[in-house]
Length: 295
Image (cartoon, rainbow, N blue to C red; front, side, top):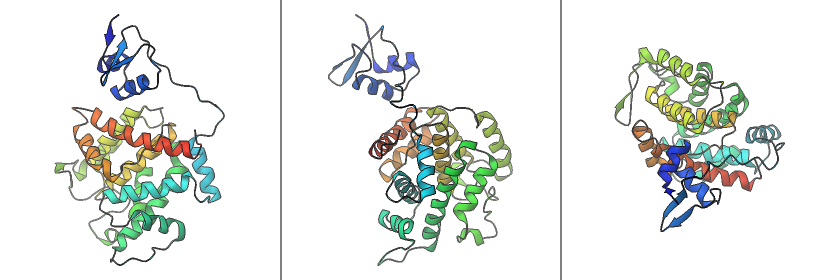
């Protein structure tokens, strides 16, 4: 019998190699076996279909988040998403608040005892980020629009030091050129046109695949439309699109930060870097959903 490698099967079926390995490991490709660390896949194997939901009437993650948000339920998946995403997304951008301090702000609206001085902006942007996640949960089914991403930026930067600077526009596109990772981004005078063109190509109201979400994220970050806050806005938009398309969301942690940045930079040449990083983060959130019995 002839056998395919994981890479060959992935190319034939239009899947990522990681997905093929997962199918093999879970026994969903009959006849596949390991030789050392290499999977051997029968050449006549059929691409596995998606598993049906055990209960098609089970509420989606978005529905659960909306219910827990409305009930102000402590200790649930809404609670965990707010704290974990806010802490990690802000921490990637340099916030000095700890995970415990982030949790206390969300739970008690206090900071707790701290021996070190903390920037007021870190605290404000933490509170603001909680509200941005609420806005995403409320808005997700309507898809991405220019108005929505500007609303998120206005909420994220409200009341901060940046908001008082005459050259910094809160809730609107940048006035000054900026860079990301040492790379040039779209000039200020071209941002409006670039974002509109991106949204037209993306077609925000159509169902999306995981790779389409990542491609949108990469292109958004390369435009870098705002003076600051682009990474957090981009990740909030990813959350929104995951919820709208019933795709398991993911949170980029400090441990994944370097791989995430490499993936953004190398997307055109090797999309697997970013895809595998986000799938790793997605695996963790899938466990969170299982713990809270969602999905």
